[in-house]
Image (cartoon, rainbow, N blue to C red):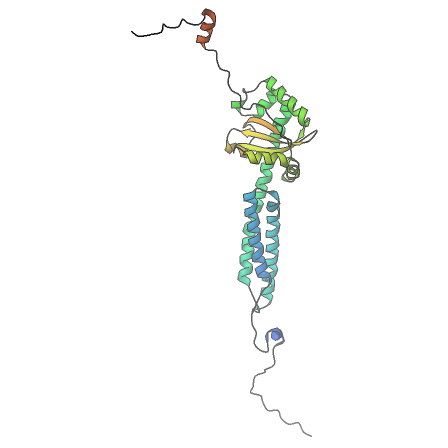
Length: 285
């Protein structure tokens, strides 16, 4: 039996390409990547936590913002790799790129803010340690070196002794103040009642509250600065120091002191010669 010659088939092959079997026979369609919207969502979430950290001035959102940003960058990278390997079968490259770009921007900004907060915490902690150590050691000369020149002559040794004695009687000797954000955050939880009192009464914009450890308990040390701009570098800009405790105790080194009123010369003359004679009454007539 001889083989019959095969007739050429003019019809195209209608069998589906295995590469497009999930999209129908011979009709490839694009589908959106599931990871691309997740990357964009991570970028928006990181931006929201960063804004919340700035407004609320709390530490936890500032710490998790870079983590969310890096997670968004990782998700966007996986999405872009998947989209590239799909050869056009998966869409969403633009969304993934947008999410990655936003995550990079938020990550850089948040890391900058976090590094600035850490540096500021170090400067504040160092200023508190220098000033409080000198005050509790009753070393007036060392304390004056830490303060602004306008406040160096506003207290004497007796005032310093009284301040140190009252603080020691309430919370004991000074142990130290944290110079790191993480350590300061953990100590803040122990002085929340004092911070609530400060919040209720209102804080001057020149005042820096900072937690400190004493022998008997934790307390809040207030650095009263010469100006608001001095908050970036408080050392050498202090005009007064105060200590507040959770039970309402408060003491200031200088505080609000009214100047003594000079004696009037008229009073001295009256004391020596007696009151002046009264003028005669005019009765008219």
